[in-house]
Image (cartoon, rainbow, N blue to C red; front, side, top):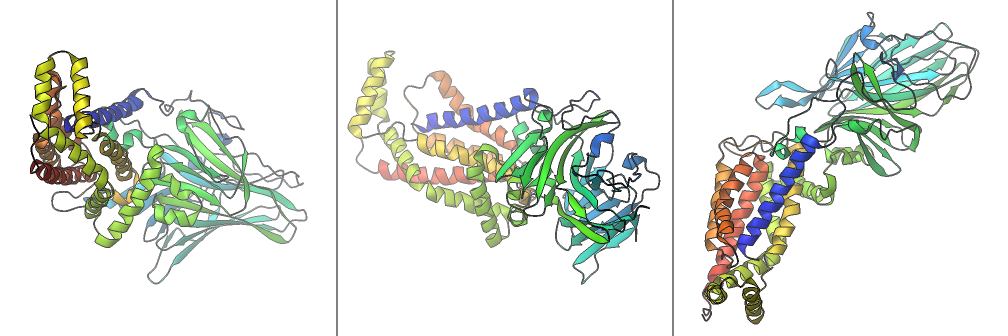
Amino acid sequence: MSSTRSFLLLALLAVSYFLYQAWEQDYGPKSAAPTAAAGTNSSTPATASGANDVPAAAAAAATSATAAVPTGDVAQNPAAQTITITTDVLRVAISTAGGSVVRADLLAYPIDPKDKTQPVRLLEEGNPHYFVAQTGLVSNGAAAPNHKALFNAEKSSYELADGSDKIEVPLTWTDASGISVRKIYVFTRGSYLVETREEVTNASAAPWVGNEYRQLQRTAPPTVSGGLFAVYNPEAYAFVGAAWYAQGKFNKLPFAKYAESPLNNTEVSGGWIALLQHYFFAAFIPAAGEADQYSTTTITTDGAPRYMIRAMSSAQTVAPNATGTFATRLYMGPKLQSDLANVAPGLDLTADYGILTFIAQPMHWVLVQLHKLTGNWGVAIILLVLLIKLLLYKPSEAQYRSMAKMKQFQPRLEALKERYGDDKQKLNTAMMELYKKEKINPLGGCLPILIQMPIFFALLWVLQESVELRQAPFFGWIQNLSAPDPLFILPILNGVAMLATQWISPMSPNMDPMQQRMMKFMPLIFAVMFAFAPAGLTLYWTVNGWLSLLQQWIITKRIGAAVPAKA
């Protein structure tokens, strides 16, 4: 295949991909709109007040004691206070109403790289953005504080001191029946993983039987407008929804399918639940081997749907004058794959690369290793290009040799075109005979292009989904590899490389004038496409283009120095 056809194939694949992404954004399934009529489907029916976010107890036996537990919404509890916890990586707010985590700022991730004082806020008990992490206890008849019960706190703020590695935040709840609960959060230096415990002390005369539930709930994010280049805006298509890990399998459920395919008390052992968004997520990770029941539901509060995923523990019995403990872990932070793999099985899969995961994950690993060597993500991308060029050297060499021979035999191809005129069938037959005689593979340019395209789109996903590359600087004018080149220098250099490649490449004799005119505009079209692309992707394709041009020029010159073909 000539370079001309290769360019056309490349353009067709790229534009088709962009159009598909734009169609998905504009006409594909959307998250449910924040209206009171939002669909609801779970094991418990939703109500307009949102009161059903407290699950029913799964304990088999009921005890004689009954507790009066507050049923009002957390935000409506006037006695609730907020406790602030600050570590080196997190600033978290916990409400004494239920001990829920109602705010989480990620201090190492500013919203704008130019303003380090405004970190990403992952969790927030606000309106319209609502995203909280809740734990609570339920029992069939015994006193049990759910996430709306009022706890007492020892302090209103905690800060990780120099020389200290942990902060322990205790909350207490007591009932006249003799049941008391200590809810404890443990924060660790440098970690986004928070240990949580609920210690149930039974000073009554009857056994206490109950369950702990852990749940995440949030509103849907605002819809981001699409367009042809929405593929370059991850907020327009990045997955936002529920995820869970069960029986060794990673599962996702977009908000739009909550009513269609809900989890309904599915029993899982050794898994986790999460709510995902671009770059960041929150997850509850029960103790290894613990059998839980997972469920999803949609509730409507203040006219807006909230999407929830819950893990309910198995029942635990606490004998009189004894203490029982429910333990779990809460993760609130970035999708750092190398760290997440050590936290829980499958948690690194929250960085979702879609159907190209099998290419993107190894590519991400290689990039991370190269970054460890160089300390610069842009340099790591350049080295990745060199590695890929080495791996594809032989197929590329075959491509350029075929193209060089095509150019060498261009006079003979033109002569055949003049001889057969508009008789396409005879012309193609004569050309195939010439290719066979001279051992030219007209499809020689297909393989490298077809190999490069999955790599290209996998790298796009790596750049858009890997939080490590978020706001990563390169050199000079490029201070954010996940954003477009602000001066358009890389897109221009890429266009120049394409022009030079066209100049040294043969033009297919079968190409009509319209196709020839289209080819002349290809460098401009690609320059415009890459003007909106992340600078890291443009850097990859530009370096790849110039290296390919150099390789093609050397091979063309070498073959051109051979005995010229007979006309």
